[in-house]
Amino acid sequence: MSQMSSSMALAEAISWYASLLLALMFILNISCCEPSERGDLLEFTMNTDHNDHHVVFEERPCDEIYVVKEGETLHTISDKCGDPYIVEENPHIHDPDDVFPGLVIKITPFSNRIGPDQTTNFRSSNVLPSPQTPSYSNISVMEQFSNLFIFSYLFLLLITAGEASRSTKPMKIFVFGDSYADTGNVRNGSSWKEPYGITFPGKPAGRFSDGHVYTDYFAKLLGVRSPIPYRAWMKYLGGKKLYESGINFAYGGSGVFDTYSNVIVPNMTTQIDFFEKLIKESHVITKTDLQSSVVHVSLAGNDYGMYGVYTAKGGTPQGIKSFIPFVINQLELNLRRIREIGVSKITVTGLEPLGCFPLVTQFSSFKQCNATLNLIPNYHNHLLHQVVAKLNNENSHSKIFILDLYNSFTNVINHKGAHDAQGQLKFETPLKPCCMGIRSGLDCGDVDANGTKMYTVCSDPKSSFFWDMVHPTNVGWRAVFINLKSSLKQFFEF
Image 1 (spheres, rainbow, N blue to C red):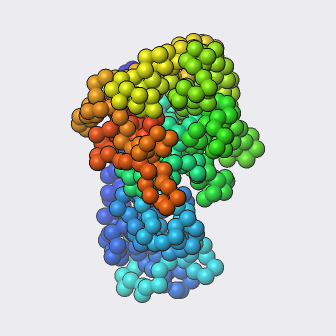
Image 2 (tube, helix red, strand yellow; image 1 turned 180 degrees about the vertical axis):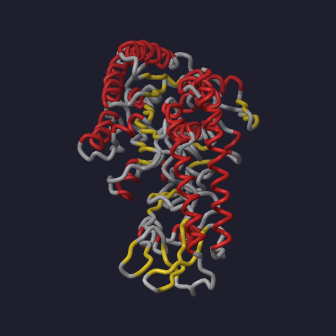
Image 3 (tube, rainbow, N blue to C red; image 1 turned 30 degrees about the vertical axis):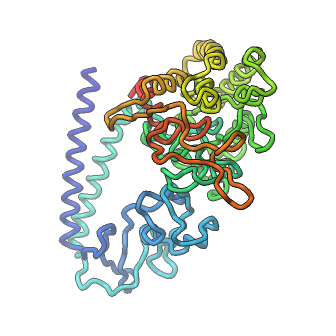
């Protein structure tokens, strides 16, 4: 422990020293260089082949796959990223004003050139040369300080490499599962209909909620962006370059087996096939990527829904009980396969209280959960704990963690809310959805042949735990995540 403390103290000292050198370099640069008229660029003039060029160093280039942030417009993004042809390169943008937070776009900055035949790491702007040019002596001093700074920084990296290698916070997330995790893979589902997405990003964007889903909160905890949906990644990156925070393979409506016939979605086995192909055939995902990643597996119960658990058509809780071991056995095969691919950390959801879904509680005027139906997730979760314990005992290098959705949902419902440092969340009628069809057989987002809305939406989604008949609201997922956060931090050891 004392050796680690001394190493960190030395690292801090070198960090301070490097910062001082950087400040001196900055002062020298100001004394010899032309100041920029733009705050986000550093400019100075230099002479190349007897021709003066005004050179612009980009402070922070944009990612090739860019996620629109709050308050950004097409104009500001174009100016920031140096790409005036965003609309032409993104056929899904039909109008320059059709840009909203969370939208994924492709960015192709101009090639950076200093002359007609010389490619470099900066772009030349057609302006008059600065009347003041750096002297040779100034440049020499700058070079000396620069070399010293680089040496110090590399030394700092060597000292802290051991500590950094011990960090357990993953940098990439790979997601498999269903609508509780899907952020845009299903194209023909309700997630692309109004009023889905009204809270975030303000319009339908592929999430089965009014806003964020579990995947988004999970990514925020790890300090990375929400992983890009697989379909969007294939379309905009051509399946050739790994997105910085991972890929989401989850499809709403899917299960470990084939599920709903009216919406063709790949089951979990097929989703893992997509993942494995990127590793073994395309080599898009490397061993290093796997070592710095976590896999999240979502199984919310669509396999049981196929047997009529929710609607009491074609199945009974008693009949379903014999089917549960088949689901767990297939899930075990999927978890083994993911682990064998090389991922060291896996999170998998336990089953939430199906008997508390509004699809069920509507028969009690949204006042109480169905205890009989909740026997199904209890048995499912019991078997899941046995399987995960066995898998963890078999392999000490790869750990699987169960997310307790059952108790997380139940705590929020029983307490009619949750609270954290950001404030109190309250749900007066937690079993009643914000958005629902106007009569039996109709769902949130349904319209008639004339386009008339056949659903109602509550005045404030933040007052509802459930968004529709089975999915939580944006703030509902936040309440669930409040109950999960401490155990997740313990699992990741941060």
